Image 1: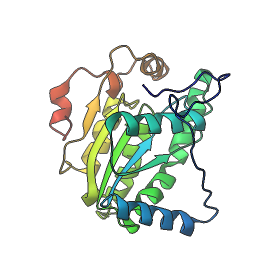
Image 2: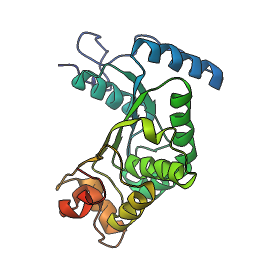
Image 3: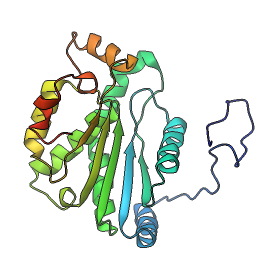
Length: 219
């Protein structure tokens, strides 16, 4: 079992997730070239992970690595990280940060397309689903299907989105060629807190009416 070590523990590559190599891309061109080379080795398949609320950069790297490791994913993994403080009390700050990051996620998806991605899988968690749905909505508003036509599996885990807002986003995006997968959790504390902040309005991540969402292309 590969896991994250305690903060005071030394990382053992045989047991823990650890950075084996770090490469810096000071310019977008270098990052795009790196993507292009990786996509050639993975038959043009890519996975982008969008983390959620209360998840700082180091934890988001760990979660992305865990998803790839545990699932045995063979494509090119990409982490899209946005400015979460990692603190429970900073929900509003995180929500605003996720909103600001919409254009950045759209740009990253365009970079993947331009680098030769033939299939783009997406895994989003918690508040990262709001960011993901908004980026996909922006493509729809621009009538741009370059990325949409390459979407593979879109997995929305515990979406921290108001149900009515989510339905509105889906209607604008349109019924996807491949149904989006929504993973719900009935005891997610972050979703409970979000619901309370929103005036006890239901969140998609704990919504109980599956048939209601299925009509819009959700499994």
